[in-house]
Length: 105
Image (cartoon, rainbow, N blue to C red; front, side, top):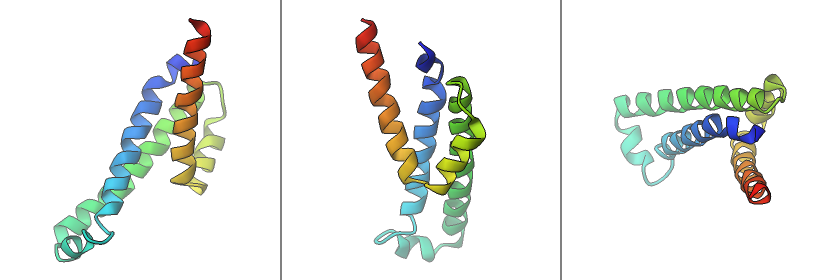
């Protein structure tokens, strides 16, 4: 039942990761042509990348704390291996929480 307490920060971390992906996509082809020609769009995408990364790390730390893990360790691991570790971690968390729900039923 401990994973139920971490569901909300994990969901928020997933949403912030999706926001980060959209902001980074603005700098990749074919969207980079539009982004590089507009200074306000470049600034918005850059600020979006920074804010969504910080918010993602905060929610990962909250989830780790609610699961009884070391928040500092998980934030450092997430930051060093970002975004691959975040994607894999979120997928594995959902998979194991579904298995826990099925075992409890």
